[in-house]
Amino acid sequence: CPNQRLCAAGAAPDPAEAAELRARLRSVKHTVLVLSGKGGVGKSTFSALLARGLAARDDTQVALLDIDICGPSVPRMMGLEGEQVHQSGSGWSPVYVEENLGVMSVGFLLSSPDDAVIWRGPKKNGLIKQFLRDVDWGEVDYLIIDTPPGTSDEHLSIVQYLSAAHVDGAVIITTPQEVSLQDVRKEINFCRKVKLPIIGVVENMSGFICPKCKNESQIFPPTTGGAEKMCQNLNISLLGKVPLDPQIGKSCDKGQSFLAEVPESPATLSYRSIIQRIQEYCELQHSQEEKII
Amino acid sequence: MESLTTDHNELPRVRYTRSLPTPVPPADSVIRSNLAGVRHVLLVLSGKGGVGKSTVATELALALRLAGKRVGILDVDLCGPSIPRMLRVQDSAVHQCNSGWVPVFAHQDKSISLMSIGFLLEKPDDAVVWRGPKKNALIKQFVSDVAWGDLDFLIVDTPPGTSDEHISTVEALRPHKPLAAILVTTPQAVSVADVRRELTFCKKTGLRVLGIVENMSGFVCPHCSECTNIFSKGGGEELAKHAGVPFLGSVPLDPQLSQSLEDGRDFIQEFPKSSAFPALAHIAQQILDGTPRSS
Ligand SMILES: Nc1ncnc2c1ncn2[C@@H]1O[C@H](COP(=O)(O)OP(=O)(O)OP(=O)(O)O)[C@@H](O)[C@H]1O
Ligand SMILES: Nc1ncnc2c1ncn2[C@@H]1O[C@H](COP(=O)(O)OP(=O)(O)OP(=O)(O)O)[C@@H](O)[C@H]1O
Ligand SMILES: [Mg+2]
Ligand SMILES: [Mg+2]
Ligand SMILES: [Zn+2]
Ligand SMILES: [Zn+2]
Image (tube, rainbow over all chains, first blue to last red; front, top):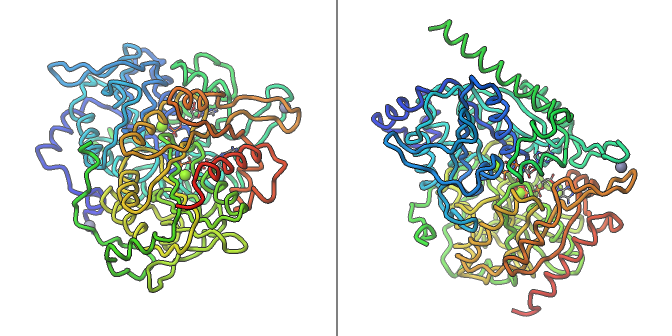
């Protein structure tokens, strides 16, 4: 079917809507989605650190969008819990961590920590569309999008709505064990189905070094060869491996940047190198596109 | 609670890649008869992903089975089914009988019945790219068309969140059986915050909460016995206190547990000396104590 991408994504946005989305997203230079078929593998942690890492350069404007509608983690991880969204003449204003790092999440629309968002697909899709159409990000170098696990409404909708814009690709997060990889391969097939380029895979929680005796334990054992083998088999880049580090969870809970708190740790060094590879990928893609134009 | 009203979308034809007999839409009486032999339905829930819902569902089934109970598992995680591998039946298929779909019988002695979308896919890596209505239709079919026979416990493994799968599962099951929920969290605040929202879901849908499990709570180094709280500690217990629901126990991070789930082995029978065993056994005991023998 020639319209497979749109068919898979349900109804195409109507032309007026697509034009609105395109107008809003024109000010975004690069878009990166953070995906995984598996829950709890570190998508939100990675999205938050990618956004912080990119925004470490004052001249880079970064937007972090959380489309996990039922389980938003980004507000807490960015130290923005309890913040509310403000309406301005030009749309919803993101909540800013720094001048060059804005965030949007359903978490900013809830009135209490007990509020559950008990919504079926259509309402979630409606909010995601609003996030893309109505949030006034300003001129942005990077739009990072954190997603829930799976291949359902949120994923189809974001791909569909972003078809009006330029998407650099997806970063896929996994952990080393097969229980996780079996879901991640589904996510990779999803990306291929909707023609979303894959920037690469991050293997997170890959081994734990005991702080006392320095021996390594495989808490989530790579019984089928881990992300490395999967990437070889599927011909995808492995962007790097990040070990388990108790400080990561602590920094997330406190809303602080792990990269800044523990700058010399093996996990930080690994995150930094992954972030750099993503940045290089995006810049290369952009310059190639400019050449074509 | 307007968001909890039934989905009146016409039932889409669920298209499987593996050819599967389409059951005749059952009358209400048939639904009753397919669930009539089920005594207790337990939902394993969490707002957070990857906290160990499927692990708890699997180990609870194994422990209840060992206690002599007849156990079934309904896996409604349609985009990321884990249970077939955790019970090493990932290559099995579902068959048709007079009263509907025959579940897959797992374990050496075939004593755990299991239904999962994993059995309906042609290739294991096929992505199930479905929006809500299709997911809801399949869940309704799972509830109405699976011939469970007589079960003491039907354990329902769910994806994270409070959306289509959860609303549909509760709506489909509730008319037939009283439902109870077990909530799983890991200790850190990021996870506890999501499980707080899941508790609200339980309250709004009138689910009885049997208790909260804190999973991945501390890791004891097998080399030097030092305990590291990789994902912090105590958050689940605190939440249980705060919410006034029973705390079922803390399950530590245990590489023998993750390894046996990778291999689809019976952790409860094979590793009674490992660090996660006492907590898992204690949780199963509390479930036995908390659910009346006769219904
Ligand atoms: N390398 C790591 N070492 C230790 N803890 C980690 C690591 N990566 C992530 N974590 C912690 O693990 C938990 C799960 O991570 P996170 O919330 O980012 O996962 P997720 O994939 O976004 O989950 P969900 O599917 O629920 O959205 C968090 O508490 C996070 O702080
Ligand atoms: N106590 C534990 N010790 C070691 N590993 C564990 C423990 N609990 C769970 N795991 C492992 O962690 C991973 C995630 O667990 P599981 O798949 O059960 O989570 P889940 O909540 O069902 O995830 P999802 O949200 O994706 O459905 C699995 O590989 C599992 O084997
Ligand atoms: Mg997340
Ligand atoms: Mg699961
Ligand atoms: Zn088509
Ligand atoms: Zn040690």
